[in-house]
Each structure stands twice: as C-alpha cells, then as structure tokens.
Image 1 (cartoon, rainbow, N blue to C red):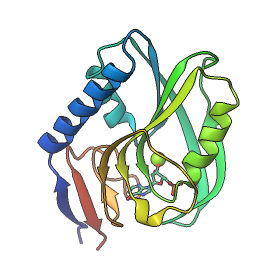
Image 2 (cartoon, rainbow, N blue to C red; image 1 turned 180 degrees about the vertical axis):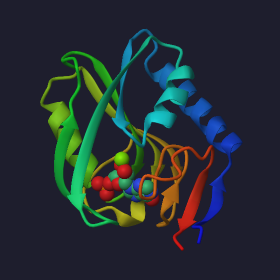
Image 3 (cartoon, rainbow, N blue to C red; image 1 turned 90 degrees about the horizontal axis):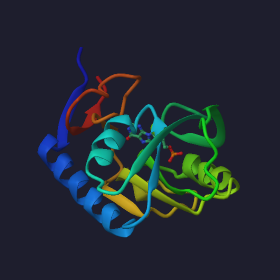
Length: 174
Ligand code: IMP
Ligand code: MG
C-alpha cells in the first residue's frame, strides 16, 4: 500500500518564498560575504535554491548531524557525523536547515558553532513547526510556519523516501 501525500505548498509557492528570502538576505548582507552552512541531507534542495537567489558573494559548506531519539522525536543528544572542512572564525554564517521541530538539534548546533568565533551567526529554515518546540531556538529567516504535521518533499524525508518531491507535502503513512 502507498503512503498518502497531500500537497501543502506547491513547487511555485516554495520557489516564490525562497526568492523573497534571497532578497531579504541580499539586503541584510549588502557589502559583505556570506557562508551558508547546509545541514545534510534535508536542507540540500533548499540551500541550493536559496544560494542562487542571493546577490552577495556566497560560499556553501556542509555539515551532517544525527540526533538520537525515537522515530518521531529527537533526544537532544546530537552527534556531528560530518564536520565543516574550514574554520568559520570571523565569517558571516547562516545555517540553512530544512525544518525546526523540537529545536533540540539546532540548539546544540548553534552552541557548537558559536564557540568557533564567527563574525555573525544566523539561522534560516524552510519550515518552522513551533507547536513542538522544547528547546529555545529563534529563527532569523523562515520560509513557512506550519502546524504539527509530518512533512515530506523538497528535501524532507519519511524513512529516507520522498526527498525528491518538488513540493512540500504532508504524509499519512499507510
Ligand atoms: P529537532 O531537533 O526536533 O528540531 O529535529 C529537527 C530534525 O528532525 C530536522 O532536521 C528533520 O531532519 C527532522 N524532522 C522534524 N520534523 C520533520 C518532518 O515533519 N518531516 C521530516 N523530517 C522532520
Ligand atoms: Mg535534518
């Protein structure tokens, strides 16, 4: 049996919103260079589209974390599986994430990256699910604020499936 997937934001709506975020970031970082830290794997589609919409010079770096927990909720015990290749000291950093849910993963990551002495550190996520927040995390750039539903598409997966859907959808597992 197939999982049921219902569209929440179309490909066009997502791309329009990313274009607006790109404009906002270009304005905020005028005269500066910015480094996007893309959190693998979920944020890849978003980070690539966002980078193309930013008018100031952009560098892209990648980081991969895993958060232990059960299937639906992270525990806050975060392990860095793939770290950055370069130091971020004195650089303007924007973390690019797919979704902030409980906030536990990002709370830990912000702390780790802050200790490395960036010139500035901001957080940009395509989706924000504030109803589930347990750790204090504030977003600087948000694509969409969404209700407590399990999302797939545009990089987000359910058991590693559906990342390649070009839209954001809600999955109801069969
Ligand atoms: P947090 O530590 O609870 O904020 O976990 C955030 C991570 O959980 C995200 O980076 C996603 O990998 C995953 N996640 C949370 N909610 C969803 C969802 O609705 N769909 C897919 N992945 C999700
Ligand atoms: Mg993730």
